[in-house]
Amino acid sequence: MAGYANHDVAGAFESSRAVFESIITELGAADCGITHSELEELLTERSRTLMRRLLQEHLDLRSVREHPVPGGVTGPDGIQRTRLEQGRRRGLATVFGEVTVTRLAYRAPSASTVHPADGVLNLPAEKHSHGLRRLAALEAARGSFGDAQAAISRATGQEVGKRQLQQLAARAAADFEAFYETRRSPAGTSGDVLVLSADGKGIVMHPEALREATRKKAAESVRKLGTRLSKGEKRNRTRMAEVGNVYDITPAARTAADILARTSETTSAEEITPAPVARNKWLTASVTTNAAGVLTAVFDEATRRDPTHQRQWIALVDGNNDQLRRIRTEARTREVKVTILIDVIHVLEYLWKAAWCLHDEGDPAAETWVGEQARRILDGHALDVAATIDTTTGTRDDLTPTQRKNAAATVTYLTRKAQAGYLDYPTALTQGWPIATGVIEGACRHLIADRMDITGARWKLPSAEAILQLRALHANGDFNDYWTYHLTQEQQRNHPTHNAIPQAA
Image 1 (tube, helix red, strand yellow):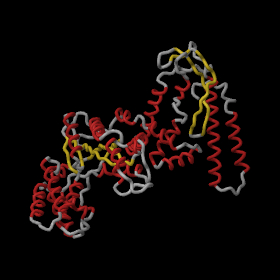
Image 2 (image 1 turned 60 degrees about the vertical axis):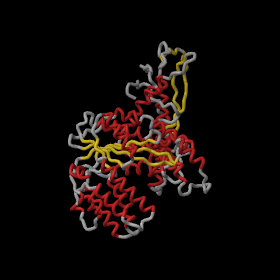
Image 3 (image 1 turned 180 degrees about the vertical axis):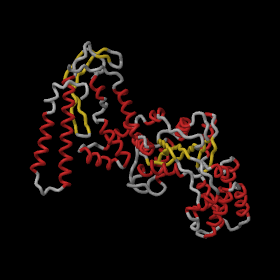
Image 4 (image 1 turned 90 degrees about the horizontal axis):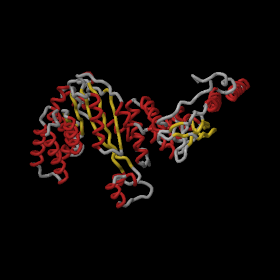
């Protein structure tokens, strides 16, 4: 109320005062046997009524004080609007309930109507207030849309339809990319290592939201059941969501023994050098932008953190060749040196694939063999391990075609990745760099699996994209700052110019 005259305030809130007095009267007359939970429910409902009345009367007071602008107002299109219409009303659904905003309207032939008070209030284009939209963004990102509807109803007493909720979430996430383009990144020290990573995970989509090739395969496939997807059928119903992350670590030198000791029951935790701890984690995700676009965003964030390329950059990947090409391309374009490392867990999976070619299923000797080969790889002898597997399988006549295929795949994988320099674990461990992609895999679980894989969920692109971005904002700890930025952007979008409103003296 700062800047308003005080002479008309006394009678402006009579209705609110009456509501407040009625609450006091009701509490004073309440049976002494009423429980505290019943009191809480009573006051929750009455407080909504009181807050809604206060909000309405405040808006009414602003309406009374809004005086015509001499000569009219000029809209963002540059057209002067001189026709004045008083008492133009619009509804606003708020966290306290629905209220009515009454204000002056300025019109001109063949031009949109301008309401200067809307700009002062920063009213949204749609009926739902920014407070209600914020709540929708928080709840829709947390759980299912049904759960979000229930949570909003409990908190506000307002009923928001599922489609409305999806639209509100999409609008709430509208400034995600712009926010991070202008967001100041955390400053790392020159000794900190900058780690980049990316991965993807499929989301079950509505048919129209699938990429063209996947949609054709889905249309050609015959479902076994009418009400759910059977094993293998989900493959042609998903669209890949790409996830990227950047984080800082303080190097922590380790040895191969530190890595392998984590699987040993005889090694105590005190004997293991801890892995470097990820700090200042930043996540992004998209189901509309392809993998190349997400990697560009990842490199943009890394560049914001280290614009002069003074720090060590590490790219941790799972070995996907297309991803590797894109990382190399981005690095060349930006003229930055990026050391690429293959996630050691993926390497171990290939070793296990070869182990079951050389040992019977469940044979404890397979575990011993994998441990021995893993140590050799961590010590820098991946090519020797590949040669060992190739030689051993070549002398075995009892292997099935599938076993030979798996062993050959492991040999090829280790050979190509080692020759490309992606398995240089001795340097990584000595320098104290991370060698596992646990951060990005955890991000995929948190951003996608925990929310998007709810049983029976099928997504449309706008809703899926919005939820991914809202969850990323929460994971990054940026939601509150983002919301302040978003409201500023909403002001500029919906009210690019608005005239000052003369108030009563």
